[in-house]
Image 1 (tube, one colour):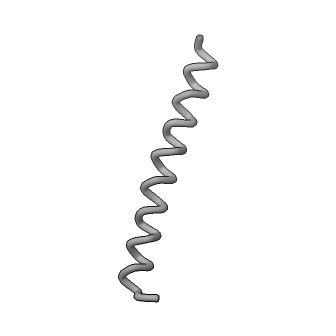
Image 2: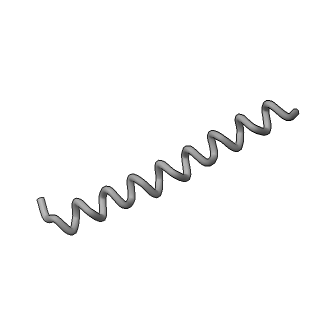
Length: 34
């Protein structure tokens, strides 16, 4: 396993995880307010 590839994979996971978490929080907030 290449070190650069590992760093890229972790970065992608962090980015996708952040997007998914943001969408989940947004939907929860919308459901609470309406």
